[in-house]
Image (cartoon, rainbow over all chains, first blue to last red; front, side):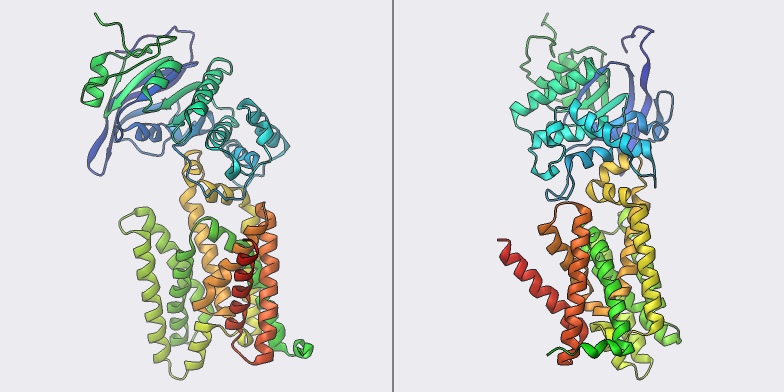
Length: 260
Length: 266
């Protein structure tokens, strides 16, 4: 089912026959997925299709009913410091008294650990991460004063600051205006190409996903996946349960194959 | 004129020490209560503590120690109930709160002749604080301050974004239980000062005012402690001077400051 990648690429994530049931319902059914260094996987699918659940399972927040998830060959709980996570629309009090750089510093927790204090190195890395997302001049600003797009960049910096190999993003552009969305996707592209971060991005924005990702999968309880940036019409129809019309940009990737 | 000789009385010195410890607690724990939106939980814990106080009286042991016990048990109970998600947190709090009050009133009434103490626990009677109360209060305060110092980074993560905190491996449910237990300890200290009914005001008002004028978390805490100290001292002086209940005097002082600050920051 999956396209084989060249042997030289390190395998980052492998999911075998993953089943997750929640309050009696099957949410994820027999999911198989492999991700290699440098991959940028977009996962699309309808609401309630299990996208966030899959990410939570990868983070070890949900125990699967069956199947296995391995990150660098380790169970999720032991690989947390190698994963950067950008949650779906971070809900926080907009007047919460923290500066952008303090928020980024929180991402160092997985490296620093319980009871240890952040040191100068951690602070320097936080500023570096802010630089990587183009937010260094916002370091001293209160997080609530920033725009939606800027906040999301800060949250990406927070996920980058532990120097992860894999980034998980859950609907990262929800609630951001379209100009900032484009910039945001460019940023992800940059992190993927130049910093070599493998990325899994969950989204329902078909068009944007197809433009920036290198692989695409469709999730609706089952995962429809061919390891390429293109999805067949049948895949999408199976996943969404009805025909979906898509308008995709011609380059660099297409969602739909040329019709026969 | 205010009589400054009041410090020559031992009960006034005890009152002042208990009040200052309470102010320090409010300044710090109150901020976490506000940021974590657990105001209602904290109020529930305060009311539930009354059950323990009643039991202490009934059995003839130290009511404050029993109050601490039932407050902490309630905190853990609410924490566990809400994480198991069978009962909604609101409902759990409502049940614990009313049960604690009912138990407290029943047991206190059964222990004949403690009507005056009942009044003191409900509305606060800082002037009745004994030396051993002061020692217990100072001990609780130091434990809580030490915990905040040790877990500052973790508590900040928990307060800002628990979902993310959990995803990066923070023991969120244990920390939340610890925070609730810290609230429980603080609440018991505050009961001595302002009484069960008014605990929540002293826990939240200094923080709410300070938050409006300060930017960083440490400066909000510092501002909140200073405000708490002022409210306690001014309230005590008013209470001593006009011979009115100390809890009410302290809370009214805080409330006036809160409304003034709201009007001025408009």
